[in-house]
Image 1 (tube, one colour):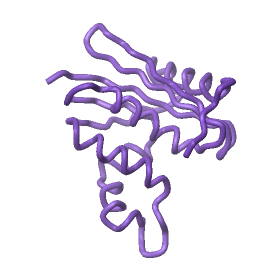
Image 2 (cartoon, rainbow, N blue to C red):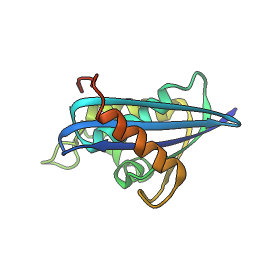
Image 3 (cartoon, rainbow, N blue to C red):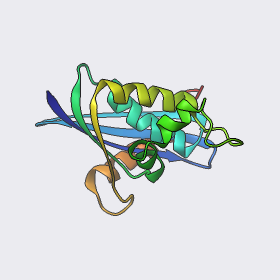
Image 4 (cartoon, rainbow, N blue to C red):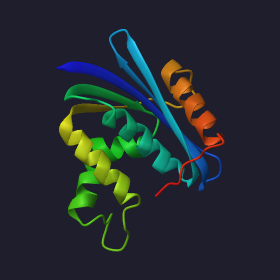
Length: 150
């Protein structure tokens, strides 16, 4: 099974506001960068999209290490929060709906297709790939052809 490393970051100018994501995939000596910008979105949606875009680009089942500076994303996967939200009909508790169930559903489906380990990295702390993902995300968010975030 191939071992792929995926580095991710999301950015948003305002929250909500224009946003983007940046993703770097590494497999051996190969690297691929992905990014896209959206007209009106949130930072958490862009963090999620960064991970989703990386996993969706894989063409076969892989062993994957995902590196994100979003504690929200990493904890929701590692601590099982996202699966519990799904099991409860996308409710965080009796009174509060989980945010972004469309993206969480996509991510949970992708996590089932691969062997994924999530890793938190401190953002804006000199981690080379995280810094590069941030630049990709910011550049995508400030682009001229921003997508609609459904």
